[in-house]
Image (cartoon, rainbow, N blue to C red; front, top):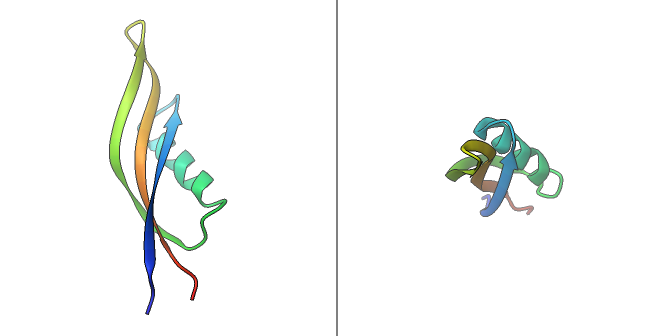
Length: 67
């Protein structure tokens, strides 16, 4: 039987939401072993002078705990 845990990660990118998701997964995988999935719980942008400055996502990352 496997036990999984979900943790929340906030990530950002100056390019796109997709890039922010990739950045978050890449960074989380450096310290979390056994990542099996993730979903975007929220997304937003920061705006400066009428232009998007940064894309941000809140990720819920699922990983399996060691036996």
